[in-house]
Image (cartoon, rainbow, N blue to C red):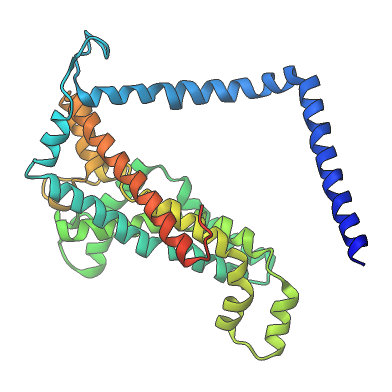
Amino acid sequence: MTFHSSTVSAGKQDSKSGRIHDTLVYVKQHWELYVIFLMPALALTLIFKYIPMGGILIAFQDYNPFRGIWGSEWVGFRYFNRFLSSPDFMSYLANTLKLSIFGLLWGFPVPILLAFLLNRIQRTGIKKKIQLALYLPNFISVIVLCGIIRIFLSVTGPVNLLLGTQINFMTMPEAWRTIYIASGIWQGAGWASIMYTAALANASQDLREAAELDGANIFQQIRVVEWPAIKDIVIIQFILQAGNIMSIGFEKAYALQTDLNLASSEIISTYVYKQGLISGNFSFSTAVGLFNTVINVILLLSVNKIVAKMNDGQGL
């Protein structure tokens, strides 16, 4: 029996190595075809992803557009020290972290819950209509969404008419963060639930029916049958989102800003935009953006390591 098992195992390994060899021979014989297909993707990646990375040198220079990167004076970490010693540094960092962490804590579970709820709908027609209603907000542009929010929350908007008040919510720093996070959940939760809904399709229906026959309630069925089907995807998404805590796009935050809510709405990305494109402080804004990126990388590696320890060594 042992001899037979080892023979079968050796046969499988030989077969696998043979397939790999055949594939390599085929690629070598038809390399022109692969070059034609891969060249556009490689060229776009190099042009728009790797070549612009040379621009981070501006963060260490007193950049002059007329002299260019190679002709500008080298100043080392001057602009990093300037940002870190700024009296507003802690305020911008705290606003960015609060917005990201609260958004992650409140927004991350919502698509998962929506996927579990959609998976419980048996009638296909109703399920498709609900999915359509949930996915539609994702196709609203950020600027249009911000315009809708401003209209709804204005002094004469529907919210104040419904409450019988005259409050300008957009001028309240304590309300701005809630408005930002809630509108983001409304816009993106339905679309984000697609991958979880697709993963739940792989959950065993036989196990679910067996659990129902054994008297398991909905929560027990989710824990035993459905959760294992999406667990890996949930972990990967959590690591990626946690690693991007500092990467908040400036568009929405900037579009919802007013002079009266800057205490909570001024984050690092809007600060970079104002310093770089409005004030023309290219070196300083690049240094702030590079600092933000480094913090993101550290967070990504840290979260991945923590999750791997909690998940039997499985991370990204």
